[in-house]
Image 1: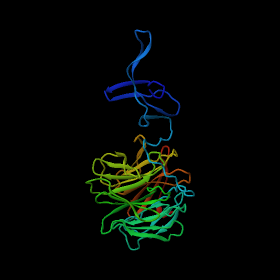
Image 2 (image 1 turned 90 degrees about the vertical axis):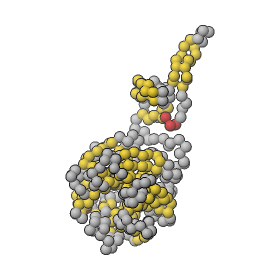
Image 3 (image 1 turned 180 degrees about the vertical axis):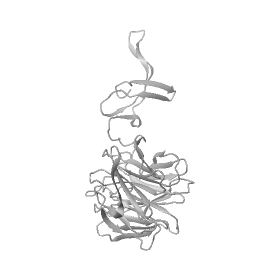
Length: 371
């Protein structure tokens, strides 16, 4: 039963599994129940129900008809409201500094350069960057990290003044990865940093700079970690998203911000070709729930966070290209929704491509240093 409507058909697979075809129904949520038995007339002429009865109504088995937002999961913690005056800031496109260069760029909608910054003068080993409103002024600030050594800096998005400078993993001189997102639920972006050696992830509070979270995301894994943060279940809070590639494919996890309880875990791709991977997440269609964006070499996939179905799966760049490709969910065309941005680092330059839904067709293609 879907609410009060019987399934269009069903097949009993085993004592614990039934495959049911949903009936036609108005948009909204209904409880799914199993009713075993039938009504018959007994020897006294009374209509009674013979069988096991009807299963209980629980939130865990609610079924959605139509495109409606997911309800909060059972026993979910209260959603922390965004403090007054601090609306979520949709991140602009940020372009890393490829190996051999020192300049990172922040782009305006349409692809023109808004900001040019040399955050780590003299370092040419590759600089990664992200954008997020760290100080709560409604403008995305710039967070950078020297790829090797874990030196993180935060710059004001308006004045470009250096707000913070620290080493995420003191004593560690290897590669790191970086992202931003409101994990602590205070309405401003926090700093997410991963050591690309043992799956060690840290979250630093955006306001205070204090260490808020520290854990090993993939026990026994030794390799790079990609990071993101977005609301992938519609509860109003950003999940901490990690990705690793241990061979079988890019393994994506989403973890609850308060408890680090695993809310999703799946292989987003098949085995790769060794050209690297990237992860991001953002609301690309305006339904209030973020989609997963995964790059595996030049191949890009958009994955529905509710169903894990691939909404898009395509080669953003030449299939034979050895270039490092990263993906972002960022503001590009000026509307309230994020666009899919793929960037390939080619011989010291960054080739930017913007793809827009629902078909994720190519909306723009250019080298960042030409605008």
